Structures are given as structure tokens and as C-alpha cells.
Image 1 (cartoon, rainbow, N blue to C red):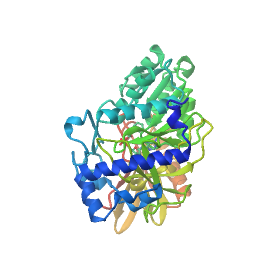
Image 2 (cartoon, rainbow, N blue to C red; image 1 turned 60 degrees about the vertical axis):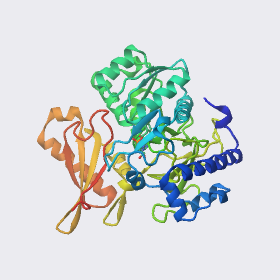
Image 3 (cartoon, rainbow, N blue to C red; image 1 turned 90 degrees about the vertical axis):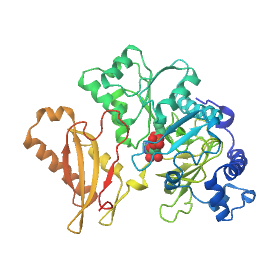
Image 4 (cartoon, protein in one colour; image 1 turned 180 degrees about the vertical axis):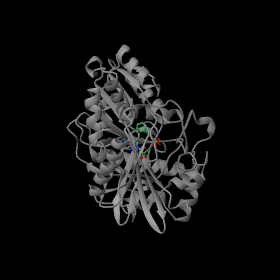
Length: 436
Ligand code: DLL
């Protein structure tokens, strides 16, 4: 379903024209109001007036996470604090948190962006939407809450309360849609199985999942466990939160809300734009934001543009693939490139594990080592048979070695010790080599 037909089905040349106009006014605004941009544009002798097409964007400097750290907390704001009506921030697991501010207009746009995603997942005013994202500085809870209310759905701010409570709400309040991280949905599905609650006794139709990487195999498990169709949604605090991009019912990639954000894909080493269809780092420029506009922000997320052609659903916005990893989670080990998603795919195939994991890279006696810590599932820990656990550990190590072609150490971790139910995100890779 389309939420804003005029925008979502605008022909590409018209979208591009709109983007250029909005970009020019954003550039003028950041040059006038953000010292960081004034300084960097002056230093690089950027003439804003000369920017006439999207290709010209490549001549502008990037904004990086480090730049945002240096501007902590408010120096990237383009309006005075009295015009800011909401503040959110990143969790700050990798350095200082990024603090973002929204004006009234920003909130209006953000709300529409998440409403569009929910509408494309089929949500209407007849739905009962259970939002099981954190409601706090994290953008997930509030972002989707606003959008679901705008659509007129009945919204349940379940937040990340216990699995038992989520299931009780789902059953008794007759939730038709679940909005949360894929890992939380996976936990809920596990709990349903454990308590012999058949998903057919629920009312769920669709799950809207995002905020962390997940694989097609994981999608399959969740869909089967909850009896839902699932929709992938992508976003990041720095750009707006959820609402940047999302799938529609045709599952042909994630549509980017291009009237608000310009996407580029750049080579992870040269930082030059890659040809359409090639994988690279996503770079976003916001073109309507007033409080916290960003020019060419390097997200660290790796994906590719799938298509610039209209989708069957009627939307004309560019579509990207799912996020296949992050540049800072990409591991180079003994000449082999490893992405955590590859490991997850393998673990999902093995019975008896959660499949939550952490990768620890270290160096012992001048030699790099790689350890994969894997959570065992709750049912298995009850068996607690040392011999069985040992053979499980060996078979995981064997599988991983075969697939990756390198020697790995596998250790088994208690259920819930790596990923606590619904509690935020996990750093998938810990590289201890750099801290020595
Ligand atoms: O995760 C915003 C969000 C909330 C998106 C709810 C979707 C749903 P941050 O906490 O700033 O914001 O984390 C952003 O999470 O750069 C990606 O690395 C990762 N991420 C977000 N969505 C996806 C996804 C929110 N669908 C960071 N697939 C991003 C893979 C995702 N990774």
C-alpha cells in the first residue's frame, strides 16, 4: 500500500530534480549554520552554487563518525536548541554517542517516513501494532510508534518487556503486527515453541524487523516460527532513525525514501562511487532535515543498489539490497575476508545453538587467532552433558573451518550471555589486536 502516492510514485527524473533543489538549500543552510561545514567547504574551496546534478555530489567532502564525535554533543546542529523538540542518540558502544536533534518539521517528516514503511508492509487503521523496540534514546520505539499512530493503527508500546509479557500481549490484545529486532522476534518464536503455544492461535500477520543484520535463513526461521510475512527495514540514528528504507510486500529490495535522502554507494577502499549494482559502503545526504542535516555521511554499512527501475508495487524510489555487513565488522584474517553474516548462516543450520555469537580476534606469539563464541540454546543447557557439548563444539569448529578455510577456536557460551533478550545490539566482532 502506498502512503504518499504523489511522492512514492514520482518518475525518477522528477525525483532527481527535487533532490537537487533540496540539496542546494541544505548546502546553503549547513554552510551558514554549521561551523564544521563552513570550515570544510571553505578549506576545500567548494562552490555550492556550482552543484547542478547528483553526480556533482562526488566533489563534496564526506562526513564521518569521527567528525560527529568531534562535534559532540550539539555542534552539528543547524538550528538553535530552542527550535529542537526531540533529542535521540546512539548507544555509544563505539566511542561517544551521537546526539541528534529534530525540529517540528523533522518530526513530521520522520513520522511520515515510518508511516510509509508500515503502509508498504500492509499496515492499515485496522491493525494492532505491537512495538517491541526500546522506547528511550534509541530511535526504534518512538520512530515506529509515531508512524503507526499516523496511519491510525492501534499502537501497543510493548517496548522490550519480557518474552512472556510479549506473548501475553500478542494473544490477549490480538496484535496483528510485530515491530522489533529480528533477534527479539527469533527469541519470541523460541519461547512460543518452548511453551507449546502454536502461532496459529495468535493473530499476527506481519513482522517489521530491522536495526541489526539478519540473513535470509534467519528470516525463514522467524517467518515459520511466528507464521508471519516479514519486512526488512533499515535506518540509522545519524540520518533519521528507522524510516530511511524498507521492503514492500514484493520483497524486491529496500525502497529508499529518496525525497528525503540521497544515497550513494562508494568503494570501501578508494571511496569512489561504484557502478550501479556493485557492492560498497552506503553514503547518505539528508535533503530535508533542519535540526541535524548531514552531507555525504559514511554509514559503514555495506550493500548495493538493486534497481533504479519502478517496483511492481508502483514505487519509483531506488532499491537497495539488505545490509550484508559493516565495514568495521569485516574481518581480514590470514588473507581471507570474513563477514559475520557468513558465520550466522552456518550456525543457523546447527541444532542446539541459539545462534548468537561473537567473534574475537587476538594475537598470540606473533600469530593472529580467531575465536568464535557461540551461545547454546536453553533446551541444550538443561541436558548439560559434557560429552555432548564437546562433540557439538567440535562439529561447529569443523564446519566453520571447512567453509572459511582457516583454523578457528570455538567456545560455547551460556544461553543469554551474548545476546540478552531484546536488550540492545551486540558488537559482533571484537578485535583485540588493535588495543595492544
Ligand atoms: O537501528 C534505527 C532503526 C531502528 C532501524 C529500527 C530499523 C529499525 P542505530 O541504533 O543508529 O539506528 O543503528 C544503525 O544498525 O548503521 C546498521 O549497521 C544497523 N542496521 C539498521 N537496520 C538494519 C537492517 C537504528 N535492516 C545501524 N539490516 C546501521 C542490517 C541494520 N543492519
